[in-house]
Image (cartoon, rainbow, N blue to C red; front, side, top):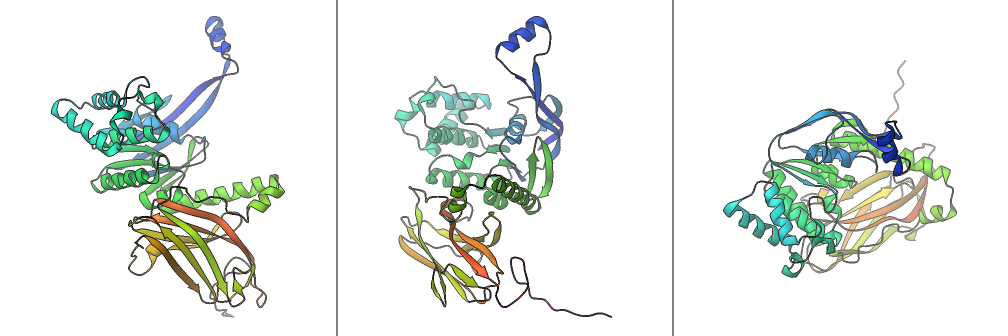
Length: 405
């Protein structure tokens, strides 16, 4: 459905605004070239959900704009088949001075929607966006980022596209609409829509995408199966994080590693209330021995009847996940449900961690196990000491020595 062949995109960069005029008058170059993309070649198959990952400034958004046709590549060709809908930066395709109602009709006209189908398109867009008539009558320049995304997402997906291009759309707006948008994307995927999905949320990328391309410095660093590419990207990020941390030995940063880095969402439908770690030595010990029995109990409070899952991970200070699991992965995989308090407990007989410093990260996910409702990352640090054995590393692996002569 989408094929990129030898894509390159460069931009002229001027040191001063007036240099553009002097360049035109003198016919002498006064700019340098910034290479946003170079040598990009891959194909997104029909019905595939394909992910794009990478650092900020890597060129992901530029590639999505080329895929959507909003900008042209400097070199190379992009081939598209089918009706394309794109969710790029906020407000793209909107006229700021016109009302929400008028912009919906503009969007319909851009996609060739006319006649009786037009009224159905407008009604469906308004219904999905949940924006009040008062807001739809106002110029969209008065909209918040969340209102922008509601209108843009509703209009883009109302045309039932054959190709959907999404750039961080699920990170904007309230949790209710994020969940609603995710369900719409999952529905489109089930109907065979080709999806090009860009996100910094690697959990969503892992859950949604069959293949992934890692964009780094304007070129494709890796392309292939989701788990292979995401794992390679996470390893790169860990190395980069370790380097930056060694370069900035800030006492406040060291202290922050033992504190909660992500505060719970104020408007969360389910909130994490407490996490308690229990051993024979007490609750929340600062030190744990290798092969000691350990249990972790997570307490959450639900303000809705909606179903949800609880996920936790044991994490190293460099953000390397040592082990993680979710109620979704247990036998049956049934989600939790019901207003009020819920407690989940996990036992680790003979904890197999070796010496090192560790922390906990806890997440509440929706019933699909993709959308994050609340989180508490890198909390309650503890140290593991392997005092009875000489093995080293992160975890103990069962093994057997065999001497072969």
